[in-house]
Image (cartoon, rainbow over all chains, first blue to last red):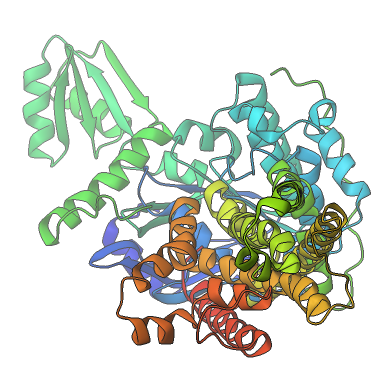
Length: 336
Length: 277
């Protein structure tokens, strides 16, 4: 499915769901027309999506596109200006034991620098009557057992990130919300988080993880919810997003390139000369091969290039930026 | 940092716990938060030490100079008030600051978001903070007041007069000083919920406690007394037997102070619930 902005807007009315995927009743985290305004600035704009269990769902968008704000609204920290979000069908506010149902890592550095890692987890455990042995289990799991008694202010960003992940997992929750969990991690740490996310999903949990790094999502996520400037752009499997994106193109090299190009242009293909090769969009390799034979034109190269997630993503967000550019001022700074 | 742990599976999902998190759970959490930062221990120790030091100095110096003091100075000497002055002023400042840090420390570090994620019913979070901090402040303030009182009276040997707890108004003054400090600390906590920033909250609190009296003292006489007796510090002075002219009685003043604190905490609850964390 190639999702343009208009398709996305259309999809929202029918609650976006992945074709062939389970129905919305199976989803654990849902946003319904979620909107957040700060004065005139719209940080999140009529955002609807549903995240289901058992897979890693990426939440993709450039910095400032409203990902964090959306996550804060889901976890009840920020009040939506419009719309609502639910976890397990309930507003976050109404959860009986929030940490036992949803684990969230929103800001890795949100830890009192004077408090030890163990004390930080302990005070969270007590608030939701989580057995205190979980504290040491989690410190072990995230590799902080040896520094558990040290003041968190001495921690590196990576260690803080691990402590934040431990806090999210403390209540053994069925749903997990991670905001940029690999920020500040070294390559080992990044691999560790990737595996952890996949394992949590494999255990049947709902894993919703934001990133502005498309390459990271390509390695971790099964599906992605894409937003730009607070607006819904797409919700689709990673593979679908890459394969069916208009960013897929064909590379053609030929001694008679101009002749081929003129013919392709006549057929409505979009062409561009890049470094002696012709980049063709909108026509597949078979059609170009047939056309070249009929002219006839000799081909030195005819290759189909699959767009990276980055390219697909750029395409989606560029549309969103263009759309906004004609309507209103860019909502810079709207994201806190 | 290198990863030393293997990816061990997390423990199997526990059966859902019946019931719901409540005030007692949050009080346990608040108690852990309070006792696991050094500033708490420091501030509490300093509260007691300030009281003891000031009481020891004031009474010791008075005793040493007693023979040289004028008759009118001797007549106006109140052993109870002198022994409590340090605990009262130092406690007002230090317990006030601790009350502020209990809240603003969470905002400054972002811990508030972890707190409210664990307990999204915000009035309950504030209630737990008030109960835990209030109890700790009361115990420490009473400790400071009684210790300062006993130290001061022990140093006031004859011929200087000293008081005992059975002296008129003495027990009320000592116990009342502790109560005053607890309530004024809760007032500071409420201000911190409204202001959220440590520096701003401390400025506001110090402004109300120390700067406002200076401004009011510039007003013409009768008006000055009318307003002065409504100020927290004057209410506290009356409590430790040092009433300004026209001051309310100790309990009437205390009642007014409780009114301020309840009002601020009610306002704080509304703001805490309405604002984004």
